[in-house]
Image 1 (cartoon, rainbow, N blue to C red):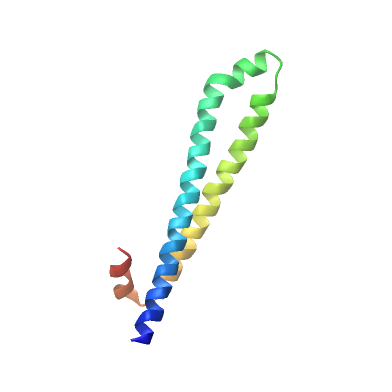
Image 2: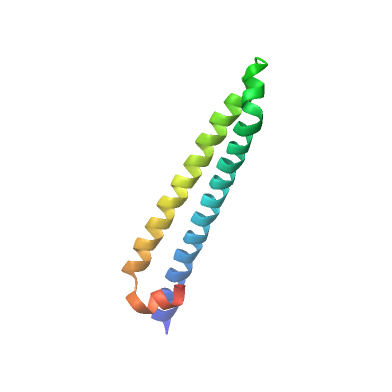
Length: 96
């Protein structure tokens, strides 16, 4: 029984890491989508009027969004590798 509890704690930790990774990816994609809306509506208008605010906003938000997506992807891949090292089919059924 104690071994089962330890395995369950490991599975719970992996699931928590996958959820964290998914949240980072979701937040990153949200930033990138809003970034696309900003470039579609305000970048040209701001640039034409001589303001570089939206250009800088676009670049900073794009870098942050891309970084969050990449970090989330890395964490999700690492969690997937960790789950495959655990108890094989039994763990796969508990996660799914």
